[in-house]
Each structure stands twice: as C-alpha cells, then as structure tokens.
Amino acid sequence: MQILKSLKKEMNSLKDSKKALILQGFFKTKKGEYAEGDTFYGITVPKTRIVAKKYATEISLEDVEELLHSKIHEERLCALLILIQKVKNKTCLCETKKEIYELYLRNTKYINNWDLVDLSAQHIIGKYLFENREELPILEKMANSNLLWDKRIAVLATFYFIYQKEFSHTLKLAKILLHDEHDLMQKATGWMLREIGKRDLDVEEEFLKENYKSMPRTMLRYAIEKFPEGKRIKYLKGKI
Image (cartoon, rainbow, N blue to C red; front, side):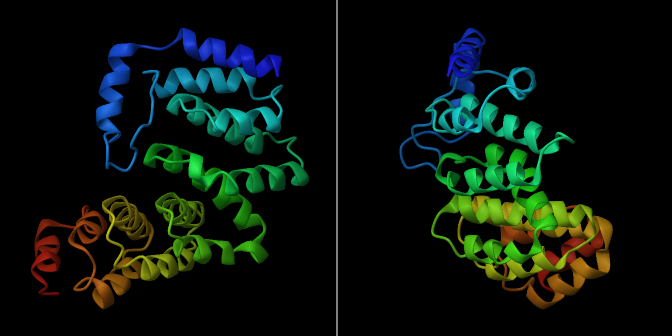
C-alpha cells in the first residue's frame, strides 16, 4: 500500500492542468460522449511509462488493480503499463501471467478508452491467448459483448496473432463486428484488416471482396487506407 501511495504522489506531482484540458477534449469526455466524465492529469505517455517502469517490480497485483480503478485516466494507464512490464519480464511465472490475464478481464469496464485498450490488449490478452489456445473462445464472447471496450479489446488482442502471421482470429471477429455501429469499432476493425494486408494482401482482399459492399464506410476506409489510389477508389465506388 505504501508503494501505491508513493506512485500516486509521483503521478500527482507530474500533472499539467493545461494539457489536462486538451486531453479531456481530445478523448471525448463531454456528456453523451464515449468517455463521459473521464478525468485527466495532463501527463504524457512517456512520463507515465517512466513511472510504471520504476514501480513495476515491487508493486503488488492487488495494488495495481486498485490503481486501475482510479478516476484519473493516467493512473489507469500507468496500471496497464505496469501489467505489461510484469508479463514481459522473463522471470514472470505462468501462474502470474494467468493472474494478470484474469485481472485484466474482470476490469475491462475500467479499461475504458481507446488508448488504454490499444496500448495493452495485444500484450496482455493477445499474448496470453497465443500461449493458451484453449481459452481462445473468450475473444468471440467479448466481440459479442454489449460493452464497447470488451469488443475493442477482443479485436485489438488479435494484433498479437497478426504479428505472428495468424489471421484467422482477426477475420472471425471482423465478420462478427462487420456491422457494428460504433465509430471506434469500425476504425479498430478496419485497422486490423489493414495490418493483415501489410503482411498478406491476398488474405485481406479475399475478405474485402466478400464483405466490402456491406461494411460501414469508416471500416472500409481504414482497411484500404494504404492501397494504391486507383484500387482504393474502386473499392469506395463498389466497382471491384
């Protein structure tokens, strides 16, 4: 608990009220927006990483979980960065990795902005599932969740598999999320399809040719963002 108090004190000392106001606008914290009511200290990600690295070894998972429940955005980010530090440590035991995985899953309602998801999902959920494939069905369950952040975590977790050139999990979730109405999900799914295309364009285009006419425009634009201009226009005009 003393370590957690020291960490929070250090985070508080780094706050910048001017940057906090900018971040609150950037991350859509107004009434009715996806991050309504979120509170910021105005601390940059590099500075938060430094704090996370400093405390990662000694702080307990119990304290990290409490930190993840913080009302302050950067403190929740710090908690996630600490978890990543822990799972990447070569001395991290399998049992500890499972504890971290389970801690993450039971706290997805606190991993409640796109930056928190995007910085953590592949490293914690993706890596764990890559090594423990019997638990892969959780991704489909999360993709069908009513919670936006569960869905984004699921699709971003497959980024770890994409790096290993395994695309089937991403494609399965993309099919589930094909008609999702939320902008953040359309962008995330399109982004993952684009990442597949960077590694195997034929795989991405096979999926697109089957689905591009019915997928949301935002998802399609993200998926074809790196295509040659001529091909991109054909997809947008529905003439592939």
